Image 1 (cartoon, protein in one colour):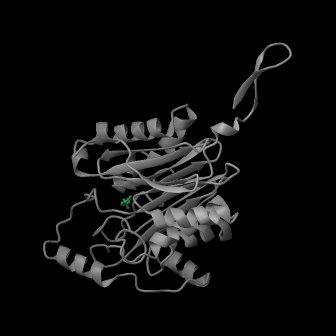
Image 2: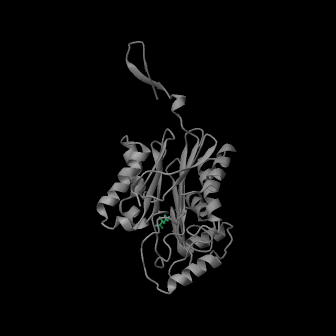
Image 3: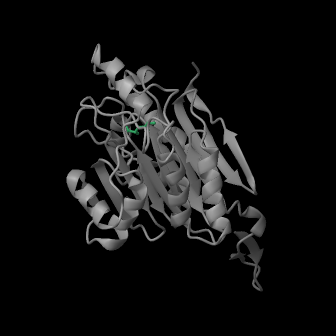
Length: 310
Ligand code: SD4
């Protein structure tokens, strides 16, 4: 905003300073340049911020090499790939699927839950049935690589609710179009070898994702249980509402977890956020987290500050 003086020499805010605008912009968790490029392309074609997020996330969902999202996701301890995903648009509308099997693009299903049902969350078999009724194909999401990972894990079957801090690509994405409209989404196969039925933060409003078009948006990655307990993404947006920058807000939300969890050394949590100007920020507990930002036609990997250098 620009401050000017009116005829009575009182300072008034008259207009947005165009040089303040840092959008359109797309930011996503981890090194996912193809996804941010797809989202950017959609924005360029004039699609909505929501559609850009869905198009961007779909790239990772379809990538069989990524072992924490969509096809190729590591299964639960019973060998089932179960997916969580959600979206939020600029009106604060929300849709999610939890623990859904056999459908490659849960984020697109989440959008349909938001737009075409009277509900906001569908889980398990109901989510899958709804997806099929909307024309999605049932397919096997367990790749040979993920199956052998699971078989190797079964030899010890040690349940470690610990996220390997270097090896995750749950994709959380926030996009702001050229008019400053924000939407977001998050999609994951969740914690590898989790208990059957386990749901993480990624698809839960306020935890893995929160969008308030008046203020900004945030999404999370890492150990979902910790993000859920601190309602992390909602917290980040509320901190930005109080005047913190995206980076400061992400840092404070991470510090809430660090200060509460004695074993923070054993898991990773990272937040990425954007505010209404399109400024972005990120912060993680440990080194090893990166964010991908597409702005001004440039697709870059950013290494945010973290609390603990390994
Ligand atoms: C979960 N937050 O299900 C997800 C996992 C994740 O990078 O982000 N992995 O807890």
